[in-house]
Structures are given as C-alpha cells and as structure tokens.
Figure 1: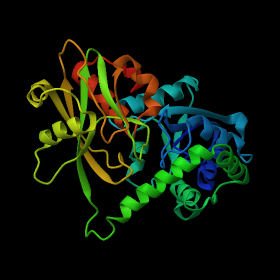
Figure 2 (figure 1 turned 90 degrees about the horizontal axis):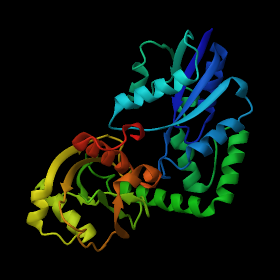
Figure 3 (figure 1 turned 120 degrees about the horizontal axis):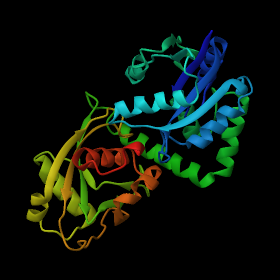
Figure 4 (figure 1 turned 45 degrees about the vertical axis):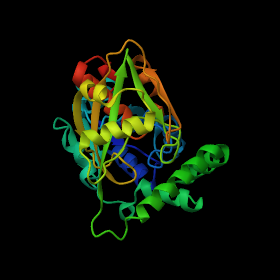
Length: 343
C-alpha cells in the first residue's frame, strides 16, 4: 500500500468514473489527495461550477471515505507549465510527511493527459477506460440540452438539481451560452476541415493601468477581456490588432502613436483555449507613455475601462477564457512586474 495517491481533475461535474478512480486510489493508499483544477475561473459552459461547488459535490458522495480524503483547489496555468507542476508538488508537500511514498492516479484518455508523465518520482497508477469513456462533458451537454442529469451518483445528481433550482439566473445564462456556441460550431460542420481561426488581441497599458473591455455578447457575456477580434483575409497581423483595438474601445490615440508604442508581440496557441473552436491569438502589447489616460468609447463591447494593474489578481474569476492568464504571462515576461505566485 502507498502512503498517498494524488488524483488531479476538473470534476465539472464529478461523474461515476471520477468516483470510481477515487475509490480505487483509496484501496491502494492510506490517504488520497484530490486536486480540483480550474479554480478561480469564470463560469462558462466548460467550467459551470466554482471550485467550492465542485468540492461540495465531491463531499456529498457517500461511497468514498472522506476521513482519508484531502481536497484542494488549484488554478490552471495554460502558459506556465513549470509553475503548475510546482504548485501541484507544493499542495502535496503540505499534506504529506517527508518519508511518505507517493503515487499519482489517472486515465490517459487523450493528449490532455500529458501531465501524468511529469511526476517521475511518483508511482503512476494507470486506470482503464471506465463507463465506456464517460466524460464530464457528456453530463454538461445533457444538462444544457434538456435539463437532464445522468452519469453521476444519486447525491451528486441531487446536488446538481438543487443547484439548477437555486441558481436559475446563472443556469439560464450558461444554457444561453451553450446554445450560442453550438449554433456557431454548426455553421462550420460542412467545412472539409475543422477551421483554425487567427485572432489578435491588444494589451494596452498606461500609468500602471490596463485597458479592458467587458464583453456584451455570448460567449463570455459581461466578462472582462482584452480587446481583439478575427484577422481579415487581406490584413497584416499588426494592422488587425490596431484596427480591432480602435473598433472595440474607440481609444483616442493616433494610429501612428499606437504603432510606435508597440513593444512586444507573442502568440498563444493552446488548442483548447477557445470554446468556439481552435483559435490562435497574436497578442500585442502597447505601452502608452502619456501624461493622462486617452479617452475611450465602447462600440460593440458592452463597456471599456482602465483597470489598475494591481487589481488584476482579485478579478481573475471575472475574465473570459484564458485572457487573465495571457495578460499575466505577457506582463511578467516583458517586465517581471506582476506577482508570480498567482499566475
């Protein structure tokens, strides 16, 4: 028997398969540490429930031994894998003794399970495919398609049904977003190949503030984001970044001044970063050295505002998709001025 086994997942929501893996881990170890990923993320179709809510669901399951179970939430870090690994090891270290034998358990379902190979000091316990490859995505799909919850234990189904009743506004908004995304993807079903979208985004800083939009439409309605949009067929990348910045924010700065203030460009290509499909973002950093904030005026964005950089960490669960992580990554890489502990 191993002293400790670590199980990492998102549990959006916990399914029969998740609980089966926890039970298997508890049969092999004195203690099991479950790390709940995607903490501090805004609600979305992929992440409908907060880490606190997912922990509540796990704690409601009666078939696992909660006395030997530690559950810890942890944020994602799409663009700083070394930080993510260190954070996992930190959580485990905090909940184990120096000489404990440690294992990690999981099912290598696809390329997203690559992280299981990055703990060479821990014994890997490989799980087989369970319940015909059941995924939490199937549970979410049923919930948003027809209000029907399945593939989860009685306690978790009860929790989810109560959540829907008590959070009608949140559930309705997520359901609206789900159908928006589905409609968009249906538009591309007849394409001979799955489309790859090219977008640009702008990070604009001035006087220790950053310019953000608040999205007016789904997906991500009311969430903060970098201004940006899709590359046009005959357009250069930087031209697109400047055009989208002007269109989304109405920023009162001459185009030539914007171009001269461009200090950094970086590509972000996480294959799963965008719920609408594969999207590769070319992020442009504009550092405006002006004596006062330029005027801004929203157009198709719901709102535009200057936000103090020091306030970003407290708002990370209010950002669309991976925009918070991108902003942190660019600013740390360029200036090293933001707190690395909250990547």
